[in-house]
Length: 365
Ligand code: 0PR
Image (tube, rainbow, N blue to C red):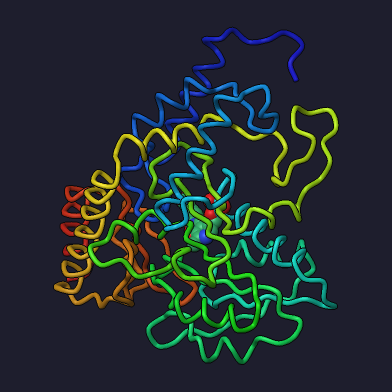
């Protein structure tokens, strides 16, 4: 650290230079994050210094966090659902598996996750000493319930299904998995980090939420399709008591116990997330999702017209293609199987897709 500080202008000139090195969202087709909605930015700035880790000091912010939980509870057909705002899908998934492990004491516990699950489950299992059993997918790239059941035994404490898989944008057969969870008394966590703010707004939404009796918890990330500022996730649980399994004493805070993973927790993105969803309402979210799905279809049809085959017909706005090369100048990603992957986030507008298709024609045809 410097002995004598730089002037504010000097600091900001360095920052401006570094910011200019970052990619602009105009060319980013590989991200599940997007430009924050202006309403999120405004709310975020207003609550910059708030800390949900000591909620008694920020009761107004804490109230908005609980309203966000209430909003998701209502959206997921359980208005009384409990939960809290996390830093994103990774934390929500870790916490869900902590609950699954704490709920049943068995020797050498295991959890069953789909082969398509996000790598956060591997982190969670390593941290928690859980054996991770990977259930194969069917030809449709969705978790196969029959092949899943084979992996369940007396030491299985948790089951995971995904709504909007990271790589191919598929929705697992949650009703069949929920039945399995009930039959085997498993904690069933639905990772809807991405799809939780897509599927409810589709014209014919697949059932995945608390309306299914076997669903125990749901992860959803406002900092993905919710257009909030980063970091904003949310973990919802059917039964409030399971959160208490994670409690530790916090004697000198304004609350005497906490079940969250992080201690200090930013209020700003949480308030931003709530503000956007309140502002847009279901109607606004349906319009955002319809636009993203339309762009996904347009992209798939456009590339197929150039002879680039789709790798899947996705349930959400993730388009994948059987090609290992992308038109220059665009930031796309590639799946573990080597397919090109484009996430049609809100910043990937119709104009962006058309510009991409012009470059794609020159590249592939
Ligand atoms: N669950 C699912 C289904 C996810 O897709 C992700 C992240 C997570 C959990 C974990 O969420 P957090 O990263 O918020 O903890 N999916 C994206 C991915 O790993 C995240 C991402 C976003 C990656 C933007 C790159 C990027 O530029 O691909």
